[in-house]
Figure (tube, rainbow, N blue to C red):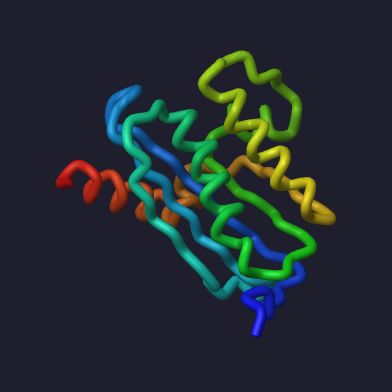
Length: 143
């Protein structure tokens, strides 16, 4: 049986990335919801040393990798990084050389889907993804 048997036409993904220091030990958190707001997947990952903005982008990259096992038409991303949202929506140019390859990676991934949106949310509406990013940073620093 194919791993692409799980079908969710439309999903919501909340992502968060953070670094303790800028740059510093960094982690990402991802929470994937179905159309009924049920959590269908999560990920917490330590990513080594990165800046806050690199971690925010990496969270989106990790989310794209995580959902590869699903058949999806539409993705609505929610991030608490206004900079990353505005760059992904092409309202701001990506001038930072450390962010450009991550932007390209995300952009190339979104071409696989019918519709992908990126929306900025306040930090208090992104608590689950933030919690997972902090767990990743906590665990990464112990290693």
